Image (cartoon, rainbow over all chains, first blue to last red; front, side):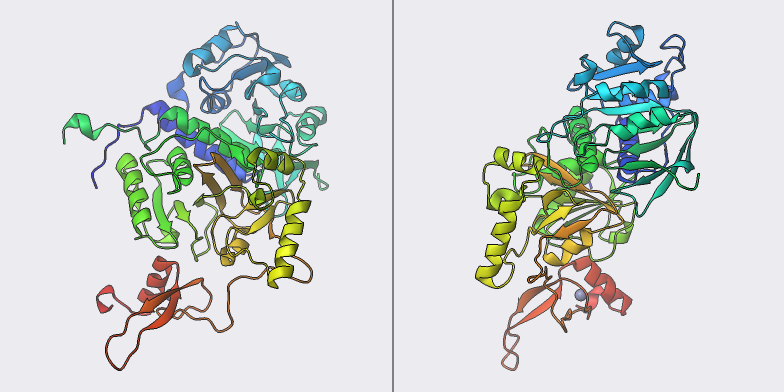
Length: 211
Length: 294
Ligand SMILES: [Zn+2]
């Protein structure tokens, strides 16, 4: 068979590999996938002063973004200003549009404290529930056992999810983001080693009775 | 062919921005099972109605490591399947297979393979007509509002009237279903035999309509319930005692072929065999058949 295509760039391969993992873990909420190495992106760890950047989380969010979409950043519970060097760094590599958080298609949250901002993201409308935001949030450690019990499409019965160093109040913001399905925000959690879990708005999250 | 000409296409044919657009909308489709999500459809060197929606999904998700299977009406060798497979392999270099078990992505028109798909496999379905409400509301914008409000009363009435008139539910293919207890979805022209095989499946199903520029999805382990009534239950095409005349399978979806008369003793007649041709071959091989025998 004659082939006629140019070899994809490292970034294109990264985006495709990452996408399949994101699609897989969003289709099977609670299933943890390992995101690929992002060393080639050389993400500075100090993009936002006082907050540690999770390069896996940022790169996964960036892989879905281009000039057709907008992306906002948040750290320590507050939105990062448009002219902040971190926003400029992302813009230079994605051409992401800048917009108000309430109109942004993607949000990258540097820490669980920023989950408090979820209510201000777009949740879509009944006619257009897809006009809603997707949030990527950096967490410390994810595990397939622990405090939270997930159910809904993509899950056979129920499945357990452990998230270290997250408070009930912070989880409450994720739970609230799916309280009026089909409206809502879809969430990916990414830990420090690049483990990722998808929590589409169709996933119900409750505190496990056994924990 | 010069070097210049051998590298003319992007990997997967469509450009990276087009892929990202399809990718983003597919994530929304997965998060909203059964809901039709609009996407910016691109023009492809294949006529609309020949699978450009499904094709764009495959192009957006395919990686060099994938093994691809393409079928049309269950057949890997039909002209449409061959053309789509050629375009995809020419622009990706991925390996292909006819074996359902060996594929990572299966692109299909009008069938779900007979062999049960696994968790690590993705089924991409080509959709000609996207909205099940078109029977009662031809205006797509008004139908979108009806979906938003789960306003399905008229569709239930339409189905029931159809039952009363015909004594059976007449919709033979593209049977409407309710996904995850919320959205009404068109199942595409798969037989009713396949409709139940979307219910709580192990695999992810992605649907693409090129002409109407929509994608939708059924995640794994998601309920898919055909519209039915207490007194008129949903029925598949299965007939008691049915049997494939080639491999002898009694639990597959069959299609009919006319066999021409071979002489004065044997008149022309109809036979039925598995619509999933590679499955049928696989059963034949298991029974000691070789291709030269046929
Ligand atoms: Zn057969």
